[in-house]
Length: 304
Image 1 (cartoon, rainbow, N blue to C red):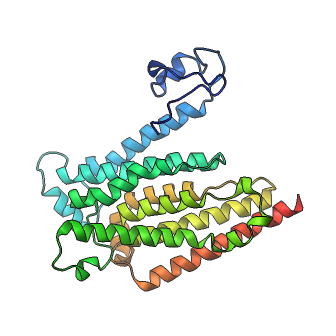
Image 2: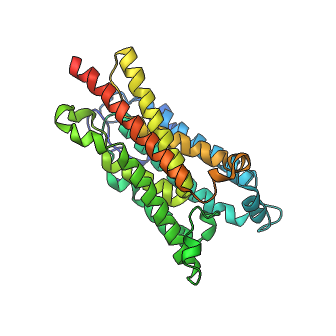
Image 3: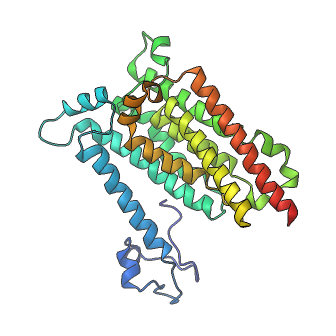
């Protein structure tokens, strides 16, 4: 997101820092490059505006509400940390969730355009997701595995690291399931529309690290359903299918964070320790949706 620096899409001249001020610079230059006068798409300020709205929306949900989106026990704990202001513990939670959502937003847009998402994009979220909860345990306020039971005499940072690693492993495993059948058909499928396998794995790992095993199981399954929906739409409308898996994962992740407390109040299994039933259902959903999506796209491609 910070490197490489921004360049004009027409002449590839580096964009000066004062011409790169979000939204305002595009308006000041009337959507044109200062050097060549070429048009700069309105998509850029729209994405910047969407990012600003994401910052504000998440702040309202997690900070200004005093953690009202959190499960009851966690929200009560947060409210006792600082009277008369934003609870201190919520800042770490907000920072981790914001980093994750911004990463998924950038990755989703890159994948939508049909480009390969660079692995380095996920670096900050993965590092924060692994190291952050060990330093600031409140970044993952609820246990989502039984790691604490296995490591009863271990320090808190080791239990937190184990929680994160298990969540990341489950996310990567589920994400990989939708590609088991795809690799067998690689020779028959146009490489230009091939899903970015590495990017999918890293995105799911980031979600698992920061939100836990139970969340990533549900969210990866939802993303697979969204991708299947795109394949069905592309088949019916006779248009090219886009990779919306990352976009679906990002939207579902935001919804999960916003409704976290309500989901657990409705069914504690949604946010508690993951069980075998949830894992098996999620795995079957991911594999089935991935298989159907690839078959639909492959059939349309073979007819062209």
